[in-house]
Image (tube, rainbow, N blue to C red; front, side, top):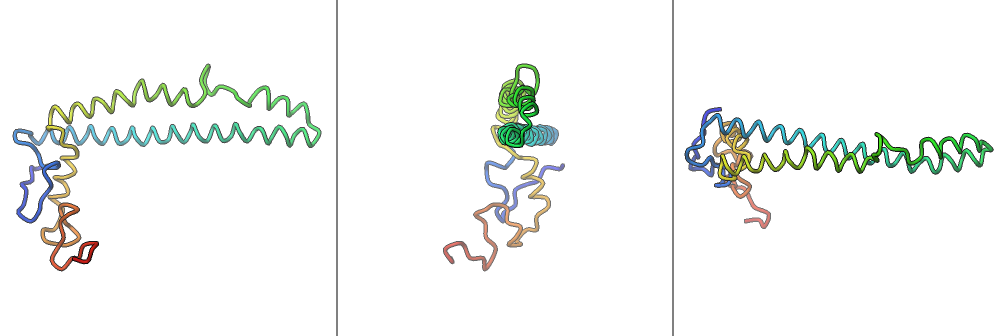
Length: 162
């Protein structure tokens, strides 16, 4: 992506403007790193979904056992209670332990490295790639293409009517 210069109509705020000396490839690399971290964030969300769904299923087994006993199927109730209820999802681990291991082994180091890279290579300014893409794609002066949340086009009223 070509470097976009800040326009006079309210281009990106300082936090989203490329610092002097940061080249296109660095901005693109940090954008790629950010995209990878966003994908990891989604994976982590799915892992929490796995954790919650598995826990919900395990708690539902209490009802299963109760119903099997009420229906006179004590042997089946015993099997569910002994073989499945409270079972590890992988050897020695319940889902909360899987989440903790993922966080400590992969997620936190990834997140930390991304923050360090942005700090070291872009002066801590995040989302430069996206900010420059926004600047390149927006229509200057169009009220629905404002560069920043505080920019209003001609005739636009703010929340207080001004």
